[in-house]
Image 1: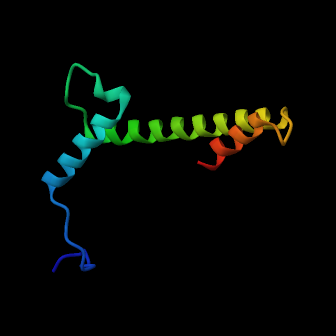
Image 2: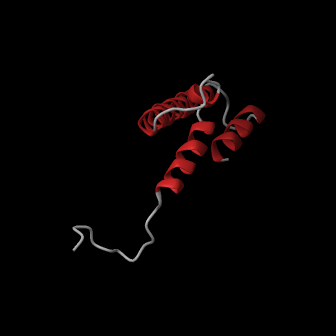
Length: 89
């Protein structure tokens, strides 16, 4: 008997994992432009985490900049309206 319990969801094959890791690698700037097209799954997942963290930090930084900018303009000004529309999108 297998020690794994069946949850009713189909099992992902090794080929599907390889394909998903390859697709993920193509999305990562650090790995996309490498001379060698091969990177270990571990490296791809590590770079993915790093990239997501950097994107999160960039979003936080841009949000802070927009908030500071919004605090320096008159609430009824056209600039404030543009900033609010950027924040709400």
